[in-house]
Amino acid sequence: MATNLAVFKHQVEWSFRPSYVQTVQPNQHIQFPGADIREHKCLLLCIDGRWECHVYFPHMPLTYTNPTLHVVRSQSQHLDDYAMEIWTNQILLAAMDRVIPSGSRHHYPFSFREIRGKSNVKSEILLDEGMHNRADLRIPVAADLLGPLWTEILERTHTIPDTCLPSNAFQDPVLVIQNQNTKLVTKKPTFRAVRSAYMLDWQSRWRQEHLVEEHFWVDLGFERFATCGATTLLRKRHCNEWWASQLDSLGQNQGSTIKTTWFPWAGTSAGSLTVELLSSNSMRAGGLAYCKGYNVIN
Image (cartoon, rainbow, N blue to C red):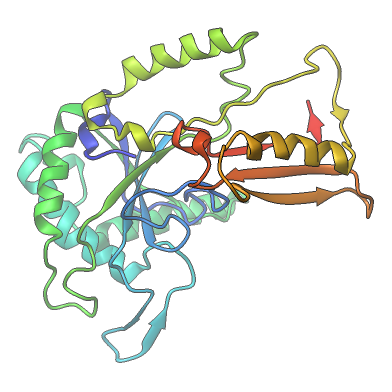
């Protein structure tokens, strides 16, 4: 979680019309203050390599009456084109007018209509090539412009008049940055080596004063049989129960401090499970939120 787009030290690719498939993964087991990442409306803002920055709008309604007086019920967390047009024209592009140097402003779009037109043309080309996702329109934004740009964006989210959305629909936006599927990319022989490599990347990539460290989570995996081929592990239920109990008992509180989800295999009691540490678990306060025992190790 970040407090400002200035958190990025390098230029980003700004996403003007993200594909619907680009969203924070729905099976999250952590929460961020001010945003419910499984319920609130969201939008992909920008990308830095494998890192994606999403913005969440906690006041954005899921149901509203559109300009033709039809009640619209959102079918996903993504902003629909009506909300996207308001965001783009009244907030984003207006902010860019103030921040992007005049000599470079022509490289960026001037309206949502222009963005939609270019996206539709690219989508038709991709469709001919067998790809069915909506085509995004991405343009680089320099790192030194991100902080001022976010300030201008926040200034314009205070109130949006003359729309079918509430005037506070874009207020209090929450920035969430994620990176998926990095286990194989960052694979190291020891945890110390993983930590060292990660900290080097951390220091080179982020301006740490804009990170909310108590809401910065890392997904770590431990490969027990690295020299073997793909191995299927079917643990018996009492083994899984013992493993889960270790996480529970270490919570040092009365009553259960964990939430378990079981994944039995082929109708048997063998399989795997996930363990989510509740807020009453002392290890949760120490930074451990979620554990999973995988059935298959590659």
